[in-house]
Amino acid sequence: MAAGSAARVLGGCCPGRFSSSFSSGGGERARCRFCPPAGSRADWIGPPDKRSNLRPVIFYVPPHESPLERRLRELREETQEWNQSFWARQNTAFQREKEEFIYSRLKAKGLETRDETGQKVTLNAEEMADFYKDFLRKNFRKHMHYNRYVESTYC
Image 1: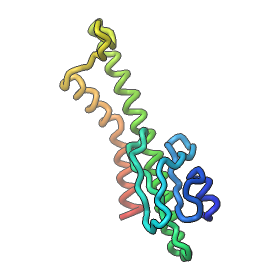
Image 2 (image 1 turned 135 degrees about the horizontal axis):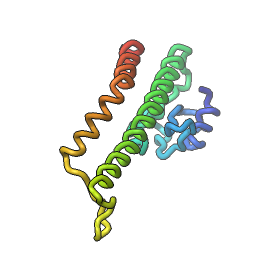
Image 3 (image 1 turned 90 degrees about the vertical axis):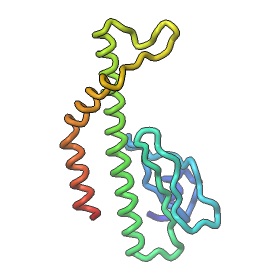
Image 4 (image 1 turned 180 degrees about the vertical axis):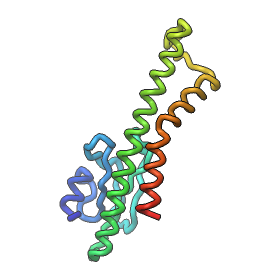
């Protein structure tokens, strides 16, 4: 990634010295919410993304990066973007299905999602265990393929 494209990816906050392929999971590039100081010569790790819970990395680009170093950095960026996308989709599905499960259980009990004081009504641990077990069962293959891909590609 050239210095100019790194600046575009990062919203112009770190032109020329850092590179990031971090996106927020929906295909769009995330704006740089943090920027390494001017004298930094290391990768920087940002705050967790709201959708994926992964911490984005802004990779340092040395002034005379060799082709091999560049390839390694690009592979790390691709890996980060792939993980970001996978976990953003997975976590979004988890939250959506969890809310649907809670709503359906409350509806079956004749309850609303909020009580008379406006507090959110919750289910107990045993009831939520049903959801977690079902979610893991439904997503077993997806997680198995994820783990196999990671293992075969990076181990």
